[in-house]
Length: 252
Image (cartoon, rainbow, N blue to C red; front, side, top):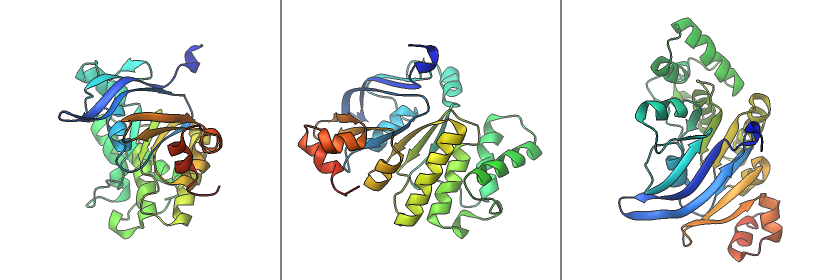
C-alpha cells in the first residue's frame, strides 16, 4: 500500500458513549481518501455520537481515531488542534451565528486560526460562498435565507480553512426533497472539484443512494457496526435481515 493509499481516517477499537453508558462498543473502520463515506442507521444508533468522537469533541472510553495518520486521542492539545485544522464540520442545524452576516460567519474560522488580512479573509469567504451557490448573499443574515441556504452557508464556513475532510451531520434533515437533492448534487460537485473526503451522517435513503461511495451501518441493539459497503449491494445481497429492511424502505 502506497502512502496515498493509506486511509485518511482510521477508527480502531472505539468504545464511545457518555458518562458510564456506552453507545458504541469496539468498532473499527477506515475512510479512504477522496470518498464520500456515509454513516447510516436508525434513530438512536449512535451516528452523531460517532461523528462527535471522530472530530475530537468527545474523548472515547477506549480506542483510537487517526486522522491523516495521527492519533487525535493520544496527542497533546497543540498537536491535536493542528491535526483538526484538516477537518471542517457542518453541524446538524447549521449552527450559524444569527447576529452575523453569511460573510462574517464564513470569515470567523479564519479570524480565529489565521493571520490573514481582513481583505484576504473577505476574498476567501466570498469564494467559499460562491462555491456553494450563495454568490450575492454575502450580506444576508441567517434568518433571511431558507433552511437549505443556511446549510450551504454552513458548508462554506466548514470549508473556510481548506480542510482535507468535511464532516456533515444530517445534511438533508428538515429539507424538502428538491432542496435535499440540490444539496446532494453540491456534495458530489465539491467532492469532484476539490478532491476532499466527505463523512456524512444521514438517514435519508435517497441521499444515501445518490452520494455514498460506501456506507457503514450502525445498530442500536448491537452497539456497533452491522454492515459496511456499497448501499445497493447491502440492499440486494446482505444476509442480515435488519440491513436489508433498512435499505429497502424506498425503491431506488
